Length: 137
Image (tube, rainbow, N blue to C red; front, side, top):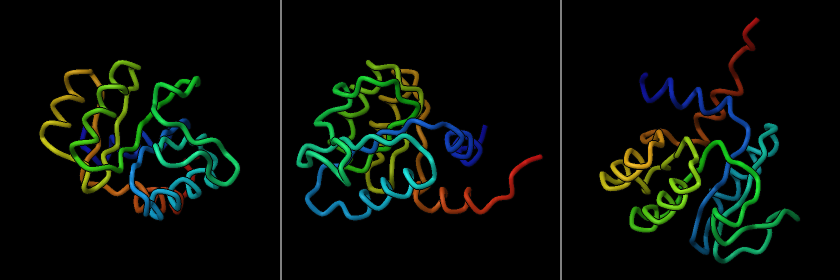
């Protein structure tokens, strides 16, 4: 399966965790709102946020009680490795490494845990494209 096909398949899932760590995460917060508006169940994982738009934020993936379909990583490549380890232990099937968070080590770690990783696609852009597509009959 191509990365594009995998990415489109993941967009049909409904439970996403968005992981960031910076103090200027406007793009991450916009993506959070975009996913919520599109009907996804979204969890923000961020060490410096307690909430966003009245929804709780979590310090780590393992603080989320609900099962997740995909973890979106928007951190440095170094910090992404710890997120991938936790996602692997939680057996989360899909990882979406936003541009700037990917590395060969991250891909190898995802593979080690049996997770499928998406790289090379910005989730915000692909989500916009996906929402514009006609529904299959």
